[in-house]
Amino acid sequence: MKEIRIIVLPILVLLTLCTSCTDDEEDVVEDGNWIRRSSFEGVGRSGAVAFVSGSTAFVGLGFDGDDYITDFWAYNPENNYWVRVSDFPGAGRTGAVAFAIEGKGYVGTGYDGDDELQDFWEYNVEADSWTQLADFTGSARYQALGFALDNMGYLGTGYDGNYLKDFWEFDPSSGQWEQIVSLKGEKRRNAVSFVIDGSSYVGTGSNNGLYETDFWEFDAAITDWYQMIDLNDEDEEYEITREGAVGFELNGKGYITIGSYGANTNTTWEYNPSTGYWKEKTSFEGAGRTGAVSFTVNGRSFVALGQSGSNRFDDVWEFEPDHVLDEDD
Image (cartoon, rainbow, N blue to C red):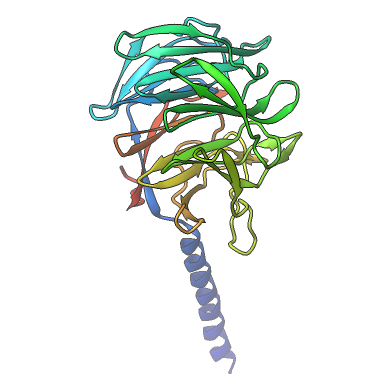
């Protein structure tokens, strides 16, 4: 009997160990793949902006740990290379907003190290030139949101000494701003947005040290907001709460990745607007970070730059949501 016990106990331990290994493997999400692309050619930075015109992404501004930067760069995803374009003529800054309307880029607000800003600029892609427009009509601020819908621009939330939730509409034909209905959720800064089929979706961010978990759809046709399922819904087992993340649209679905929730997180989540639900995807494969940029060009989405502590990054990653994780690419 003693010999039998000696034989059986190791087997039980082995079975327990194998079961634990299986559970760990099941916890690894391998739905989606990240591929590193050509590094950003400027200095590594955080708090930059990005907008897309045609088949080109434009990335610039930000803070490199010492200086508030004014350089701008164009990225060609098809051939995977960067070219420097005309520098931004305004003050160097971090936490600005940017969007594109009918092939032109628009950049404004931010923080220059001393003051919140409210100047607003138009970039002509064909002429590679900048023109200063009338200032943003809302308060000077940084870490706000900006996006374009139906050939109009929108800017809201952020921080001006107070956490904000107001929203403003920009008409590029007149260069004028008009205040519209505020975000119906909480005030916030460092939130994300993405645009799908005529609606913008807004969520994440922080307010007075608290992470915001509400998630909203903005319908530009009727200028109103609709609340969606919270980003930390216990029934659906979501935990998308964070600030300093990036959001982007690809093939009719929205994505949120990276950011900070007490510590940096790399988790990636996919939003399906037809169902209103989220699905976890493969985690971002670069270093955890905040203050990055994202952009989608011709059906391809990218995440670039950002910071972790005092480290500023210059790496660029493409996300392929319909591929299986390949750690060797």
